[in-house]
Every structure is written in structure tokens, then in C-alpha cells.
Image (cartoon, rainbow, N blue to C red):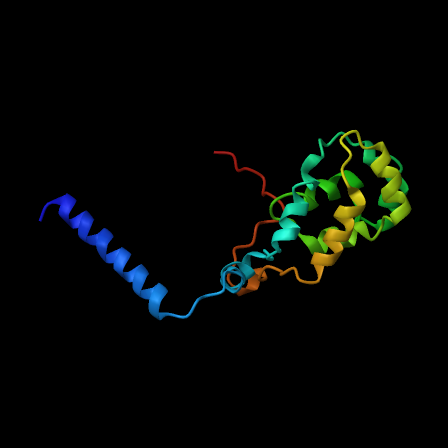
Length: 163
């Protein structure tokens, strides 16, 4: 059997299988399938309106102006808060850790976020980002711990050996 004929048969078989599944199998909810496939990766599903809103969050150019006045807050947090700019960058990326970002935004009040919005040259909606992160933090999943099979990344790199 030639390669072309074999490819066409495989393609036809795949088409028939797809049509049979669409006709006779129950519909599978895409959101449920997403959750089943990506829960272990720490990803959480968000709704279409949330995705539309997230488009406005990525305006940050990492200029650092929103970090003004954060030094005392950083020191007082004992390492939990690392600055506003880092929060905005982390919260506006494709795979944000909503729980960690919500803990960081807890150090910033509404008035402080409003003040920082006024400093922003690209008008990043800090208050909207903070609300969005806090609303999604409860539904966020956490990755499986390393003890359940994931490889652990070493906390420090051992010194190189001389040859």
C-alpha cells in the first residue's frame, strides 16, 4: 500500500471516529476537561469576561515608579511583599499565582493603589488587578508537592568541581 493511500485511510478513519464521538458520546465540558488536565500544574480556569479584562493588565513597562514608597512595607513584611511592580508583572502574565499575588496585594490599601495608579505612565489599572487577583485567589489551584513525584529544583547550586 502506498504512503498516500495509507495516509488517506488514516485521515478517513480519524474523521469517522470524530463524527461517531460527536454523534453518540455525551458532550464533554471544556472547563471540566481543562481543570482535570491542568490542576496539577497550578493553573486555574477563568471565564471569558475575566480574559477580556486581563487584556488591560499587561500594560506595565517595568519602570519601577509604582515601587516608590514601598521600602518600609517591604521591610515590615519580612520578605512576603517584594514591591508593587513585581506584583503587577506577576499578576498580569499568562500563568499568575493568584494566591501569592493576593498575599502581596494585601499589603496595599485601596488609597495606596490609587496613588500608585496616578504615578504610572502607562495607566496600569492597579486597583482592578488587585480585585481580580483577590477574586481568583480562592479558586486557584496549587501544584502537587515534590513528595508526590515532581522533581525538586535544588535551592542552591553546588560549587563546580575542578577537573
